[in-house]
Length: 303
Image 1 (cartoon, one colour):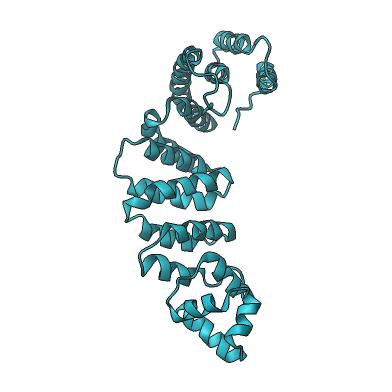
Image 2: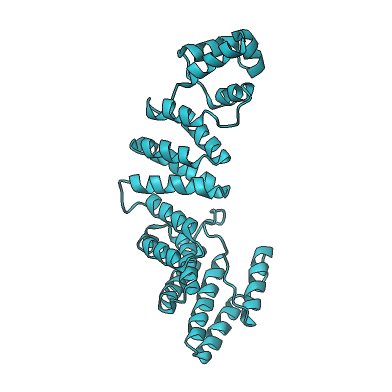
């Protein structure tokens, strides 16, 4: 495969363009373009996209070659790598992300930045690209008890959930050992998600175990809540009372599966009592309404 510079040179020759003409079409300074073609200046992602567009080629046409030239055959620079990853994710160039990231994660100095990119992509629901980076970061993490590794494994668990019971069980079993390494508030969502997976595949003993763990940890966090700074950012997806109530809903579902209906009623009453809040916020009220619906016998766990 020829390099990008030689491809540009051939294009100018074949189309009969002077450098000045092409620089105007591409909207790149002629001196900058000359330096790029001579190899005395590295090309930015923006310049690469402008040149590609000026050649009337599809977006990302040169990305595989650019990845090799800038990040595999030469020492990668984060200022170029970060926008490259975002553009590849935007265009769905998953193979290129995999190729570059596998090489780059050999250098531990990039792990923090790569994790942050994965989080950003995850928050934008660019899930396939995020998963590739999370898996590479997790595989390169030196400290097996780190919170970052645990958070990677949590994201991988969430992204690996499928319609296949076997796949979900496999993902859950792999994730379980990392829960205690997560931030204590984040653990509540992780346990909720893990229990939900076990519920969908009817492993009721597992649901019971994790529901009671959720109850214990959520009640502790509720006690700690009054000691925290009021402006401290909440790390849980829902208000804390939700997790105690949801633990009781899970336990009631276990008893329902076991046909122990007195206990079903007992735990249903428990979670309905918990959601009787004074002066609920709008968010609280939406959650309260959901639990009241579930209390009438409609069992639909939150995502």
